Length: 253
Image 1 (cartoon, one colour):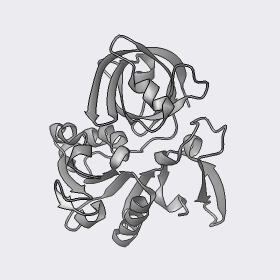
Image 2 (spheres, rainbow, N blue to C red):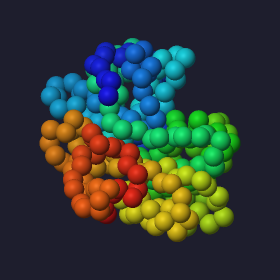
Image 3 (cartoon, rainbow, N blue to C red):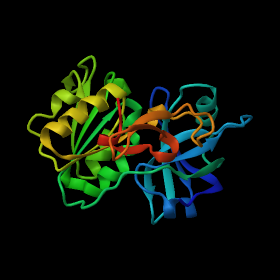
Image 4 (cartoon, rainbow, N blue to C red):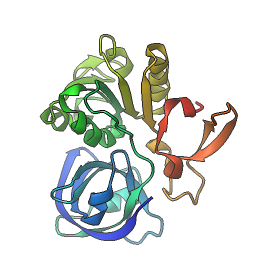
């Protein structure tokens, strides 16, 4: 796996929803080698432990990376205070990303909350062949809907309180959606339910367990997850090194 440490200048900053920020950075070589579903470790001022942040989008021509993250602690709060013209200290790209295969297939992307950002770049590569089902707490927490639509994807929204789109769970929006492959990222209960759908339909399914990551470099063991080996025996893997993307059949819930 190729990765590097770079000082990446911030070109764009936007607050997408309360406490959720989007940054576009000039990343050069990092953007050249970044793949859908990978992440990077960003260094917050005054901290020694980097924060793992998913790569939301990659622009190979501009050689930029886009990060979208939610403030969940002191480290991400410090990162959110950076401004255009400042530079992030970035280690990346890291982890095992999505394996897209034939983008002429019908793809179903399912994301929940802050699990939505890492789905944008792979969904853009499927374009009109992608159906994207996104779940949020409410309308005010909704992010990236227009970005998916701009890429030609069909977008379905579900909210917990019914303030926008379907009132309920994303898994309640899947009837009638044809797909050859599923890509998903979000809360574990949502991913577990999607694995059942993949089993019932006998289709490929790749899930990102990024919410389980802690240090992002395999040092803290906080992201250990139970996986199944080809022989059926169970073992433990690290989300940050062996993932964050796994074939759904390898994950033991």
